[in-house]
Length: 452
Ligand code: ATP
Ligand code: MG
Image (tube, rainbow, N blue to C red; front, top):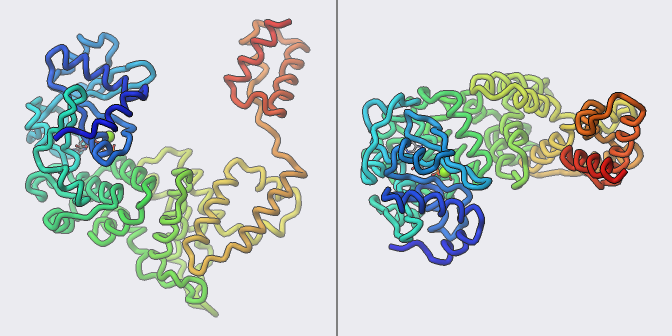
């Protein structure tokens, strides 16, 4: 079965597709069976232009290095080699088979194998789709194309065995269903549920990586719901699992309990919401579990602060970098700030409205309201207006693009009044919007110096 010629043609007209083709063609011309595999082929079958082409080949890393002298062996033991073509870097993976040593998180060695064996060790039928870039043939040993048509998530082989070999595959299956808005094959669903406890074996780094990808998908809430229902969340992220069944003030939250609220917020993500904002949204209220109290109405005093602390602990456990933890915790701990903002004096407002993360905080305010039924944006709109007026009257100072040292290094000048003059010119050009990046500023200085 050939892949649609139009998508192939369109892809090869793009520089990325052309580069992938060139790399593959060189391997094929040298006699090595070479195919595009996985997500890229899935995309092409759905008439979507692939953004990330994984290449699987019979060539061993040393063959690849011989054919592409500039190639680097990415992970020698895993048979993965990186090849650069123009500005693009491709990961070429040598066909391999699943072996006893390849079980679990970080296999130490791999056994190379045939294309058939390579297909057998892949996780899902829709991920064992191979397209030949030159012959434009499809190699589909597990009827992945039929499954794709029904959006069916189905493990290759015995699901329980495949999960035991690598429990990460459970998260991959759940993520893939969220990605294609799909459904599970009954055997796959049953195996996911039965083996949920194995998810504790997944390393923090791999869990974080899966969560990051999931949160960026348009149907992320699907994946989160599945994680809950399959009893996997309980094992991996108990702090989130506990949110189900926590009641909220009935008058303000018609959407349901705390877990429902979080899912509604996640489903309100817009495509350009940053990953940090998405994480903050998912975790912004987890402190409500322990702060729940029935007073004149249901109250969650200090929940923002406690949620931020819990989020920090979770992100630490997952090995998230300190900068990311710090920003997410900052966003969460200030997500109840809307009301106080309006009553601040100018000096305090300067701190908040000029803060480099304020716009992300504003997104969190918005998402929190969007995930609440009924959604009342009146206060949010007032904040946006107030900030706009404030910024008109007190423009945010621009961050200097270059320092005095940068200018000296660029021009070879010694410390002098001249450096100050140049910095002044850069700042003028920045204010006028003529230059906006460090690189542009460097070019600006060079051409200005040359023209003198
Ligand atoms: P995406 O669109 O997210 O990139 P993908 O299918 O390309 O989807 P990758 O994570 O890039 O996913 O992996 C590439 C391919 O490698 C997958 O399609 C799958 O065939 C295989 N694969 C990755 N991880 C595993 C695993 N843990 N077990 C089995 N096969 C895997
Ligand atoms: Mg991929």
